[in-house]
Image: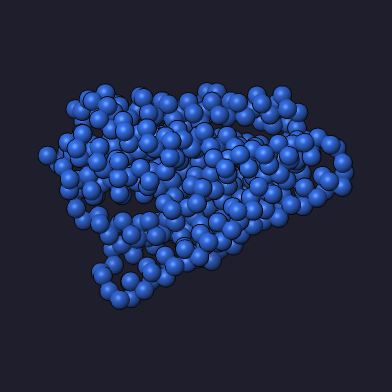
Length: 395
């Protein structure tokens, strides 16, 4: 709560400073915003790559059993569904772009996704040099490499060499998270700068209309996934969604208020075992894994927010672009485990990696507090559904 108040205060202070119209002050704010953008770009690549590698290396090794297979299949299906709902809503609602002058000073995305043919897209994600994707910030190539390395590590036989590699990667990730926490600690200063940038250039009415539609897409997608898509998954497996939700309600409500799937895990497991009647071996295997990799709300947030930011950066949102980023959002969400500030920071990292106008995320940050509550509740509800379906299939 304290952090949220500080963020909102920083947003207000920045907006006031931007409206003063002082040239030297705007230059200072532009400088500070550029510094934060460069720092996020610095951390973007290792954040994405290490998160995906360590997730698959850690949990992929458990993939020999039928339980993990079912868990992974249902996780991917529900996560793809959540991202697809977000993409469909984005096309239907069509949030308007901010005025052109608000993003003209920000570097546009390099190599915009929509400019090439589908064949070029496919070729561009297949790396022929392991260093090149890192230097160019080619997000999809990096995710492909991270996925391959993570799965490869999970399939290696247990040995001292494998243990050293995995522990080394986990150690690097811990070091990276330390740097990220330090950056986040100073983030209110960045919010002031981003907010001042935007308020100096953008009329409040247009921002309200544009951001309002964006929030409608994000929250609307979460609501549809929660009350329509996930119940359809349960019904397809012969389960009563009202019964399952009623039994898992303590966990869903706790997730809503704690905004943490990990903190809610004990309640989720207790509800699944003692209220829903899921076998203990299933619940205690499936739910910890789902807490780590089953991120329905995160996938939708990454996709919708990325499309919104890229649209404001001048990237044409073609069908190919949307499908490409749907894939990126799903893989990124699955590999999102343990990243401080979760989906917001990962989305910011992805956008920084392609040079999109991340200043727009400054005005989304305070709103994200509410979005995070809904997303976490949806994630725990999805975890519960995956657990119930897996238990049903293996009975």
